[in-house]
Length: 382
Ligand SMILES: [Zn+2]
Image (cartoon, rainbow, N blue to C red; front, side):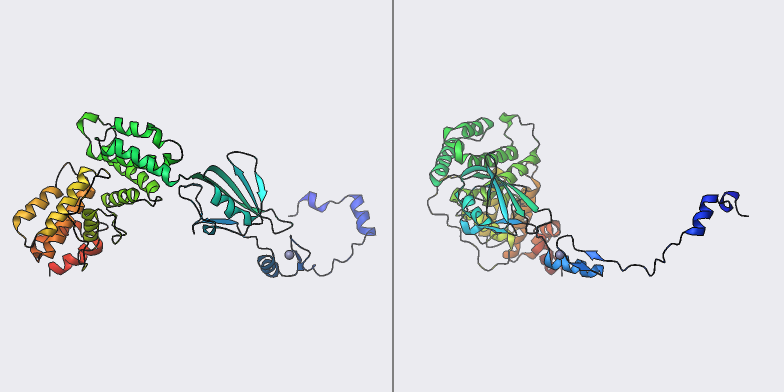
């Protein structure tokens, strides 16, 4: 039943209906698609999409330092050559140094400015405003330049040798090293890497006199931050410490690179692949001088590796010696794993595959030893 309100129409409506004629709207108008950037008009949406994609695409501007894009906050510790700096898809660059007002420059001017920076906080905004009617696309970078020259780095190493190599590592000596006048200024970044390494040793060794409250496992964070900083420095001391840290953290990548510390180079090669034909030689007779401290856990493992590798035959006494280190309560889990790996590798190299089964079963699924231990276990348990 229709409702009353719907049926009723008033007099005005009846009048309009009698007098007005609405023109025939005809067939519906064809849709048009207008390009927002230029005067082109298209009848099919896909054509507009293709047009905008082809003619008006605005790429994100990007900068590359040494082949990689700087992350949100990047610290540059070693000088950059101009050829290592690349800028792409940018039309204008705004550079602000040490908080001063930003200056506009062309993208071509960026490599020179980056290569010349030594101690600076640089903010860069790369703009791509190649499209007249579009908002420019921008990318921001914040780069800290902490570049010290060779003589400044040598002064830091002198201070390191005088405070942390010649005396024992304590919070006090680390503090003295960091407040030494030689570690201030441009070399302070390098000094912080060395100090973090020593703090890591302290946390790992936990001498009783230090009354440490920081948990043992935190040594890995200190080692990690030391690695991040020191890996940038192409100096023998930095290479040696990054080698020790990587080894301590069970990272045997770059096993073929030499640190000059024979035990370390040898153990690294042994643990990355025990079946390799040639091992770095152990040049025990050459003259040595102490260059950097090595934590006792790592030193114990290096000692085990060189001693076991020197054995030409195997016996249960050697099993016992390895087992003791692999189960030691004062050593870290990463060192237990390395002890097991040395045990397995050394036993296998003397042809005693039965002795290798016990350690192999414990590391067959442990990264990174699984890369060889799993296969070895399969072979010896056949
Ligand atoms: Zn267009």
